[in-house]
Image (tube, rainbow, N blue to C red):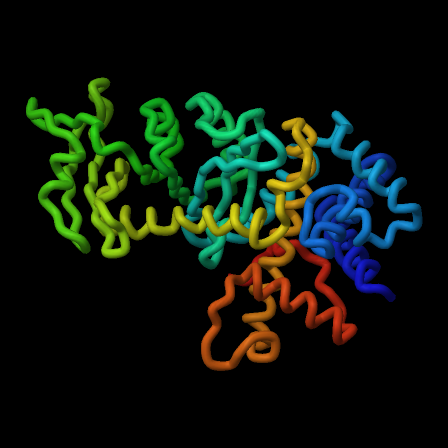
Length: 362
């Protein structure tokens, strides 16, 4: 059996488990999805001709590309049907501890940007929901942030403890109100010129930052945020030793150290975008410029990412790291470990797991 046939069989088997009872058109859609995931992993690319060249489908490459094009244009294929059920199973598996969610945006496709929410898992962020829009750069409106988070809320396990992390784009008052109403904790970066007030006295985050040196923090509990006087919130000026200047945070947490510890996890989403682009699947070079088509392509790209991170966790847990890397010290991410482990399994003719990591190794 060829490497692509082995990959396809494992991926399609995993999808059939997640979508038990699928038949007819849905089963055919899942088959094409499995082929796309297989091709993305095999080619390390997301442009359709490259994907088509790494699938075992019994057709000419040109015909396979057209099949993939039809799939990305099919209005009946959406994230709600073909990805969120997988994300729901993943979140349920991780809900034994606080679910740390990160929201951020990035350039994807050709002339498009994506707003992404992911869950932190072992210093990596696994995508759970997103949307794409036209644009080369810039921020999404606050109502779009809220709409995407409401979608995420619909698949969270009942009673799950949630912490949301975001950079300076996500410090809006309406978003903070939504977090409070859902009893989610949040830590978001904000601007140094934001005005704060406490017992009638006004000051800025920058004023707080003037009282600290590298490695220190300064907090102002129970303050009101911006001229709108939202709060009370905890305002923090935090000068990390590895930063050139302080960063400023707003949170509904009560303990400064806890808020800073959680916010440090936000940077994991930067590595996710790097894995999906320059260090992995080159999503920014997919050549797709339509946001709807790109959203569908990202279903396959995100499942491919899940699978590789799961393989990385599996390799570490089962003691394969010394075989595929080095014995004394590992400087590879789970994503890179997963890619090496996949190559090892296929080179040795070993079976591949039929799972996307919806029951991840914790």
